[in-house]
Length: 221
Image: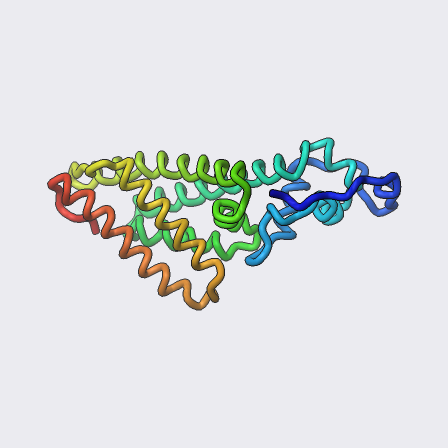
């Protein structure tokens, strides 16, 4: 759960450098600025986020009930943003000579190392957060799986009318593997990314090739 917060005092609202008003996005950005490879959202206190955002702690409650609500909102934001970015990468690859698998994995690792740290939220809170946070992350992964399932079916059909055995299960296997590898990679030096990208790309090809082979179709590229 989130760190406990001390009682708020009148002095908290009297800081001259603090902003008069603030948006939900400002508070989400403040929380993102505080997390890192060894700091998850669930370890942040309300006072820390308020200080980073430049507001009095009492002003926080105009946007969120508590830090738990902010964390769930951040998980939702991270999921939506990453799904859009990865989806766009798959579309670009589908219209080019590049491998859809390879480009998708490269894009995932780019987001892993991005300054905004949105992917870190999903990776950290999915393993170290509260039950509510883990459920929110799992909900986002389910969205990933559903969108990937549709893409796998579409891409297979475009490749000579191929089909996949249990595309929903294949998309689940891919999604869970990618995020598990990401959770491992986030604590490793960036110099290892190229090796991990190659390994992960081969693993995903194995999953897709297996799903096509079981269905009686030729393997994917």
